[in-house]
Image 1 (cartoon, one colour):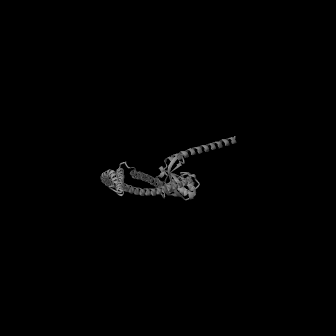
Image 2 (image 1 turned 90 degrees about the vertical axis):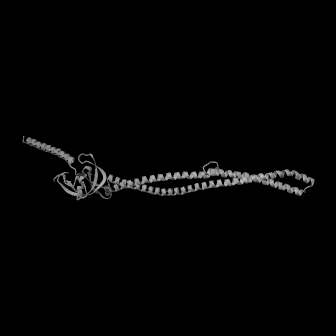
Image 3 (image 1 turned 135 degrees about the vertical axis):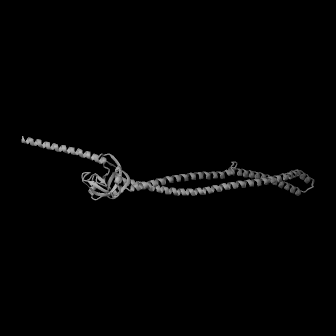
Length: 348
């Protein structure tokens, strides 16, 4: 009977202890929920090490950014040289086009003046030809009289041959003059048509070659201007991208992840809503039971600008905030679950 009473008494004690522990656990959980709902100076200590995926991934991201930035800068330098070359070529082509245009105008004027002069020569030749033609007709009419006079013995054979030779020479001269007149007329027409074509017409095939050269130069000028505009637009975009990439790369390099490549680095994650008391030199407190029995264990060395993400230590929800560099007095403090900024969370 006594043994049964002892067992019953022990059972009650164990049940009471279990119930008390359960009540304490529930109260502690409720207190923790209430605490984290109202406290605004808690943070999460983290130790970044060289072997962590985020550290390795960040280094890879920095290297990729540096390579892309280097490519963009090389492309910008290449485009700048090409732009300089095309601008020089554009100036040269504009000068050549102006010279060609001036030459075509001057040539058109020369053709016009030469055509007028040649037309005057043609008129003179035609007057001379008509005058000589009358003499030739008279000489041809005298051929019969030469033969008759030769038969009658009025002239000698030598005289007859001399007269015939003079007649043939005159006839040959007339033929040459006629050919020259035709040639001069053709040249006059060519000059007139060339002058017309160089001035904007389309009647001379040879002059069209010069006009087509001018058209090709104009097309080349348009292409060069378009290329220059494209290069300028491309360079402007590259400069913006380079400036943006420089700023991004500067932010990536200003990160504790890069420090962690060389050695383990202590930081604390601070949610945005708890950033009020964060500043360089602010004290850091860690506690034995998360929120009680706290003592100063370090201080803030710097605040990083990049946005980071972490899980809420109590509610396990995603949080946004920043990393803050800290210098802990003892390495074990960096392994705590919670740290507090600037002051203790409670009075002790």
